[in-house]
Amino acid sequence: MKKILLPLLVCLLLPCAALAESLPRLNLAGLTELLASNRGKVVLLNFFATWCPPCRVEIPELIRTSKEYANKGVLIISLAVDEDAGPVAPFVKKMGMEYPVYLADRDIALAYRVSSIPHNAFYSKDGQLVLSEPGMADESMLKMVIDKLLSQK
Image (cartoon, rainbow, N blue to C red; front, top):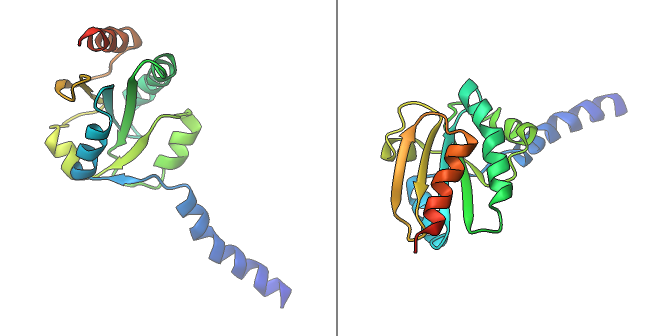
């Protein structure tokens, strides 16, 4: 009897473990609310996918930038555009992405005209979208744009 119960218990608990490692899903309405609640901060939206080589290069630079500007009114939010959400949470954990990461619904990618990744969108402190473009942003470019937006009133 014990030989049957243990495998059965493991099978029942595995879906729970998978759920515990899932990320929140975000649609355009939710993102709009999130941006509104962070008005007063410079916000960088980073669109990425786990299978994207340039994204894998850019993410460590985003992590360093996030840590450097953590107490300076800057928020980095990453939005995963993977078709399969399964590998995203383990990827986020492995990469050490300690800033907010969401699974992006298609409506967000459409609204930002994301045709390739990585794709970055910068918001000024007054909540205005000031730059949205595809391509990998290196650390010096990230800091240059963030510093410029922080200096604005």
